[in-house]
Image 1 (cartoon, rainbow, N blue to C red):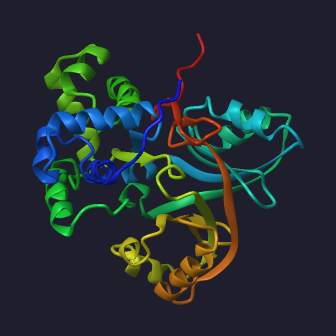
Image 2: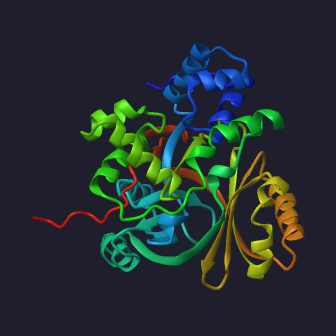
Image 3: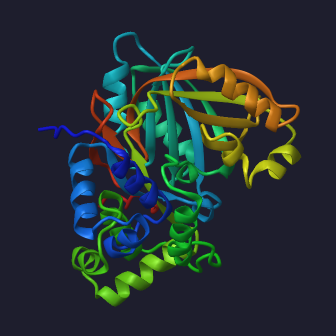
Length: 344
């Protein structure tokens, strides 16, 4: 049963804090937000139970450099779009699924440990109700989605929370491959990104010290990250749009550090291989804002040409989290960084 809740300013500040420091303790957050730790924990639980927020794991640059990540646009048989999307949502490698307005029905974000060709030929090719697709291979992510914020905190609070999270970021690339132990930790982390080391250790069958060491290796080495996601429509961003464009790569590279600050609606910016070389996702307060935001992107990225734009009509799955018809979080299909085990 869905829990009804009203989101107030304290909730938005808490969400913003956890976007900046997803695993900070309630005591640490209480010092920054000036709210009792018990109150923060209780409010977070209410937001989670209502399906409005999730802290989950996502693949970072070190992972993407080893694997195939792509955006797929699918055309389905008339009347079979939801059935196809529901079936696709069970696949761990199909991270996000969005129903969009335009030539193609579904936009997928996929990561394929077994290889993109196998994903397309074996998995996508096995759906009789998928009648066509277009693939855009991701060559880089210039503005990662976890950097988007609800912007409810003061600059000083943001600086303090960023410092709290510094230990989980910016380390050297992790050495060695992802192991089955790493995968077990990741599976539990996807469903509960704030789970403590003792809880993760018990679920993974190792000591708390081992769990902490392996998790910190994954985070600091850039293999995975943690992010606080929201049910955007309920929290004030009911419109999402996808833009495909082309621009000089040197212009993009110069803008990567602060493009999100200058265009706060920007959720994601990737480079892709294909007729266009750039992919944007923007979150908007209202549909008419799209023209203004598109113009701002063109101003900030001289020479940018937007070739196509799609409005998201419904989100079926979002970074491993299955969404209900109301686009609130229902359950998690954990990310898998290892190829599936061969059949016995």
